[in-house]
Image (cartoon, rainbow, N blue to C red; front, side):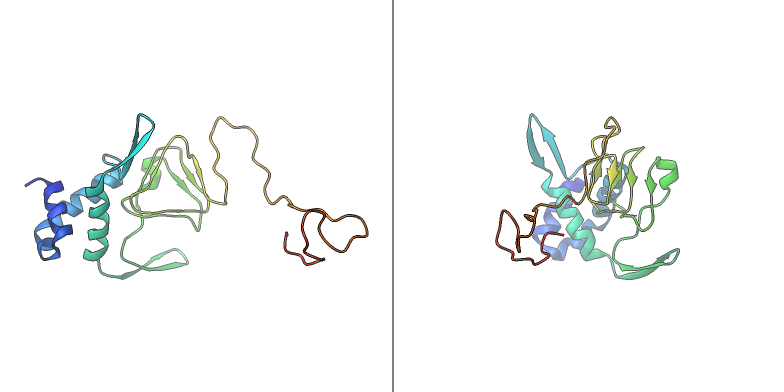
Length: 170
């Protein structure tokens, strides 16, 4: 049986999970290396590889909770963080995290951010975190934290809504 068939069978019937453990592990390793994707855009439409998604859900079921440390940070999780980021050409600024099973192309900066298992961060998403995504060909950053409403001079509320002096737009 192929890995796909083993995973689909185990997802449909959890009593078969022991038979599919190695197939799930291999699939998560493929995700981690970027050799398979959970979803892929083809001809303008997104197609989900359901069996890969099922492998991720089975992986969570298979893994026990364990504690780990990364510098001053302590994690209690089922999935370890990604290793060998320098070799992969990926920069992660603390407290950024990339989980094992996620793929980031060389040149990606996670600052600070979180990349979950099954994610694919590629050439269009070079900067992850801090509410901004930047492409390397952009020279200016988008404005951050602009006020949405202005007060009229001497007025007790917003000019466009009825907030009567409450600081709801900061």
